[in-house]
Amino acid sequence: MSKNRYQGDSDSYLAKKSQLASLITVYGRNPVFEALNDRSMSIAKLHLADSNRPSKAVQEMIDIAERRGIEVLYHERKALSRISKNGKQDQGVALDIQCPLYRSANELLKKELPARILAVDGITNPQNLGMIIRSACAGNIDALLLSTGKGNVTLSPLVIKASAGTLFKMPIYHCHNLAEGLTELKQHGADICTLSSYAKTTLFDYRPAKSAVYVLGNETEGVSKSVEAVATVGLNIPMNRGVESLNVAVTGALIAFLP
Amino acid sequence: MSKNRYQGDSDSYLAKKSQLASLITVYGRNPVFEALNDRSMSIAKLHLADSNRPSKAVQEMIDIAERRGIEVLYHERKALSRISKNGKQDQGVALDIQCPLYRSANELLKKELPARILAVDGITNPQNLGMIIRSACAGNIDALLLSTGKGNVTLSPLVIKASAGTLFKMPIYHCHNLAEGLTELKQHGADICTLSSYAKTTLFDYRPAKSAVYVLGNETEGVSKSVEAVATVGLNIPMNRGVESLNVAVTGALIAFLP
Image 1 (tube, rainbow over the protein chains, first blue to last red):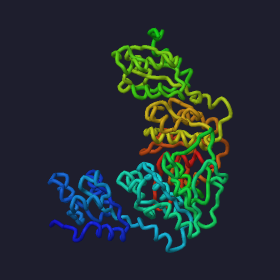
Image 2 (image 1 turned 120 degrees about the vertical axis):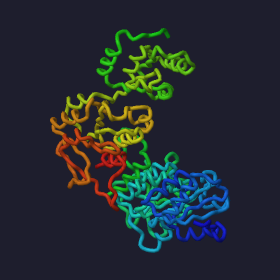
Image 3 (image 1 turned 60 degrees about the vertical axis):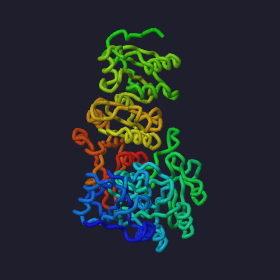
Image 4 (image 1 turned 90 degrees about the vertical axis):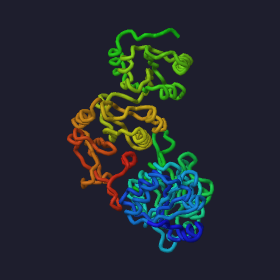
């Protein structure tokens, strides 16, 4: 395979990629290598930094890509950082995975809102996010909403693994800023629900009028202030024995399996 | 504090301890040290092996025990292994933590069976077991049943941590062999329920006649054969999008929060 240099700068590549929007980028040698070896994943492109020194590991990635017919693109070191969004940890390699159900949140607004949306606000633990995706996919959630901005984990191979592969089956919508995304959904008639032990209505008794977005907050801090400001409904999960909170993935599962 | 040597052999100590039965033993220097420093834990005894060489770490444990009025007992190396039940990893130290709601499964049979019991069969991941205990404690589970025999994780500091401290609030019953413990409960009129995607009744529709024991199986293998042989009811969790299974802690949460 001849060296393919991306024609144009990486910013224009990113703009084009953002239009497609159904690509998840993983990075780092082990994650990229694992994904390349996983035949269940549909892979769009392998990105390599010019600065990579020739090595057995990189050559093996190129060989697998060649066998699978995956395009290999070479970038300047800085350009690769913009693609991986994590120059410190990408080790000079990144991989775009096709995720047909991964779309921009704008798509959600184009037709009637689904009845039940689960939004994640600052979930930092990949294990938790993967479990949430798995429960949402198996349960009665129509769409998952997440922000690709600061504070959320990226959809990394760890998340894919913890989701037991369901990440590729679940309709996932991304926005840049969750508070803004939720504001638009609210303007389209959705209830924005956050959990609070002070709320009078329980999660189990609440019946949304039209469409409900349930927001799961960060493991320690809970829902962020900007998101709380958009919320319209507070819900409480009744707990016995003085227990004050549940694991966030458990809360996600209880929401996912509401009747 | 003068050197306290246990009067009698370690087997008689274990027999006496088994009678008390409300003690959880943790081992290893870091876990013991952490528990000693946690004022919320009620600690019965610190056990040290004679073979421990004098060190700052061990001396610090002894000092904390002295300050907290915790009895320190010294044992031969082999005797300590029998107390920790893990001579390879105990590093010569073990600690008995009081757990007032941790009792022998025989206690369950002495009065009317509780309506909802959650049993764990071969859960190996401490994170999962801790989450299950937390959900059970917060939800509508009357008793947790586990075996202390092979295959289950022990109630280690990792489990305590993952349970967010709820391990000390939840009534937990232990038997040596889960299949035998379940057989006794069945003879006392309880339904023994396992989850199966082939079952016709769903978890959400099922109404037990009297008392139900829901069994959670191992993360990979599911419920063991000996336990499956005792089961009387199969239950199915309906799942969308072709998802085949849920994380075991998520399944536990759905059971815990059944109305």
